[in-house]
Length: 493
Image 1 (spheres, rainbow, N blue to C red):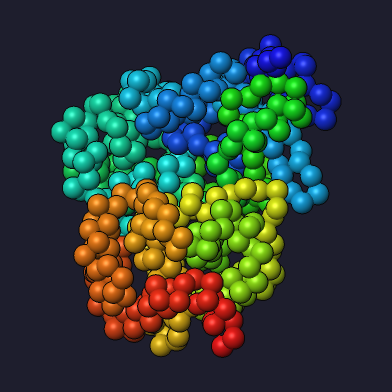
Image 2: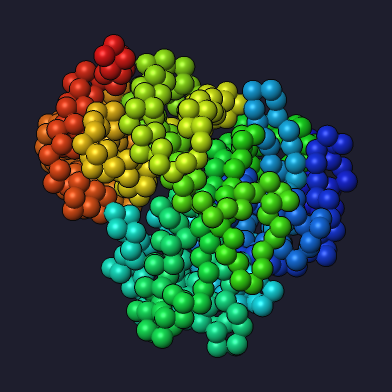
């Protein structure tokens, strides 16, 4: 027998143990437009806003997908409601989130989305569009002016599809109407994400109109943020378990971990929610928090994924049963990453390292290693190459970081150690695949070819002999001995 669908009308049927909105949803008005209504936003920023609506109902979220209608199609029949399951070793709690007031899809609702962004009630436009969604060059942090979406939006700026194009068109309309600009709050893993997105958006605006570019550069706030909560893709098994716990069908719930951290720079000229009341850290040290998280959590997370997928480990938690892999990650973090962070003054990095490895081992999360491995060309510059550059500048060893990069190159080959092919799911996939096909299993040729991709490694790392030597040695071991044996040999050193 089918269950009733989650909606405003069925909220009253939830079991007492399932939390639900503690405010009148009908009284909520939009204060935030969010671009990128994926699982991470629904597990991280949205619950914070949901907590705050009981005190101030003017911060509802209008959420937009850039391409796919899947989230809208799943949540619209549910009045925007969805279940958040927080899963830890001790058990799982459930909560229904109600702060999303409207769901839009850019190809279908472009005009309505821009109108919402131009609405004077909207004071923040936030983003979780992944690294590739910003149409930028990851190696330089600048707008990719030859990006197809950027070129198209500059030719037709009033009907944009790209993130920079959408933001600039909405800001232009507000400016024409005499309205103050909204703050642009990126919540993606970009280095100095506020400054980086300002540079990207201002450059797009200046290409469209130099005066508009000066306005964006001088008048629009881009607060920096650091976000952290591991959130796997939702599976059918998750849906079934959540339906059993809530008694209602939910087409797209979200499963996440108990840990959550959000650090926000206080730069919101038009106002902001009372973030601190919901546990958000409002701080002027966002870059330091961000650097710690990207290098000490995201870098090892990607490293784990590229190594584990070769050994047939489907999830992060599965991979954490391999003691050689765990010890490799711990030593890479302690010996090669943490030394690049000590000047930041963030305190107990040892405790952060132990907490990170504990989070990776959470048995309640089924975070697929192949999901983490996607979009490597966009992730490596932020997650690993900053540490590499700092170590090389200090004349310090990069042996373990070299193996991390070699593991990504092994992934680019496109076939794992069991002979199973995989899709790279990467914006640079055609270029990377062509290099791998030409090099075959020649470690030196493969490393040389991939290091020459300047969109990833820039001009400096592409020609650094120390990096090449470390990567070639590690890649040769992965190709000749395999990942498990390579890690075991490293563990004996």
